[in-house]
Length: 167
Image 1: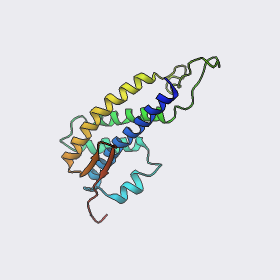
Image 2: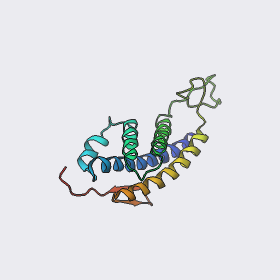
Image 3: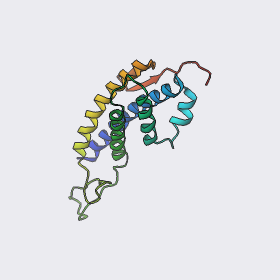
Image 4: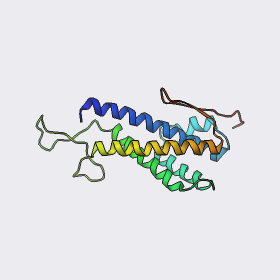
């Protein structure tokens, strides 16, 4: 895969993950506060040290407490999978070559199987398959929970409507 094409996929995957992450943070906030608490979202959930792993765990706990949600673990695991794929693309500038020759196809190392390279095309396909289903399901969950949001499908921007509550 060319560097240019890989860069386009990287951009799309990171942007799509950020959208899903926005849904997840809204669900977490609504569960714990009963409304979208802008200060909590800004100061905690959007803090650069608040990891996707922590958000996945909080997300799973929030869904487990909602009796209307079937398969909360499945949703959390799908979010974790998208996060893993996003990380592959966020850090895929470093490649390795087994022989150092200029015409040798270089690969992105698999962090879980150190003697193997990632199958980028397979990861791209999996990402978009999971993303499409999970995004749809999360929008339905947000509707069920009464989370107000606006989404611009032209540019992918998500706007969460934070109720005016004393936080």
